Amino acid sequence: MAMQPQRKKGGETLPLERLKTILLVQLGDIGDVVYSFSCARALKETMPKAQIVMAVRQKAAGLVEGCQWADGVIVVDGKPRGVWGTLAYQWKFWRAVRRYHFDLAIDLRTGTRGAVLAFLSGAPFRLAPYALDGTLWRNRLFTHLVAPSGKQGQFIVEHYLEILTPYGIQTEQVIPEISVSPARLTEVERLLAVYGLGRWDKVIAVQPFSLWGYKEWKKSKLATLIRRVHEDYGLPVLIVGGPDERERADEIAALAGEGVFNLAGQTSIALLPPLLKECCLFIGVDSAGLHIAASVGTPTIGLYGPSGFATWAPRGEKHMVVHKAFPCVPCHRKGCEDSLKSRCMDELDVDEVYSAVRNQLTG
Image (cartoon, rainbow, N blue to C red; front, side, top):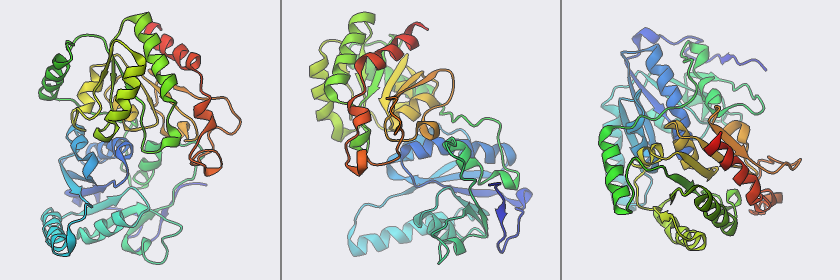
């Protein structure tokens, strides 16, 4: 199906020359935010003088400092505050949003929160993908809508960009990039020194965890892989993750033995890009770390099961995907028959992953 702008009140054009301040809303997970940086790039390359402000959830806010095409960030914080606390927060939040005097608001998703934010931003032009289930009120909050092409296996960046391209907003570089400042690299140097590692030592990063357990690999197999890599190549391995994953990371480190360092919970989201940039290889499941590592130029190995690697895995010669050759992969379900358990991940063999590691380290 060809992608065409939907006719709405604003017609089929946007006055690009008049757009001075633009709100780019991405209220998805961290990986979604990383892949949205290419949209910020397209906006800045098309309208170099425009101010681009990204609206993201609290957990992803620190990443926006690495988006060289974004001029600011609005943090959407949904933590509970009670009735009066919520009223006070909302008043301050919307006052801050309105101070930007946005000319255009773009919501990259089809949900309702981003639609409300775009509408209440006060922007006279509001652009979003057309939602089949949003005909009652959600779609009506926008002046311009684009019907997604629905291409099978479409790279997620291309999916986001096709909201913009009908209006002449485009970029030739669809691979997302995260910039790293010298100050952040200095922070990483201090962090690695705590573990007896120098900034220039070759290290491997591993992220075993995902928001969804059915995307994870068995701890015992990952520990075996780490031990084998360390023994064969003598490279230190850093386990990365969030604070709530530190205990599980300790279990993997204990099983893996020497040369493994548990950094789960020891880095902010803003410090993760420079840390991964200093690594010679990243190994991880379908999670934020995989997308961040690729965006700072580190070679990656993505372990995939039920989720669509054609859509979500990093693109480029430096990146590899390992998955079982089952006819049902990827099934795009929450585990086998939505059981939250994935046979394709459980049966992924250490040798299959190790072969990819050897290819990346010696190829």
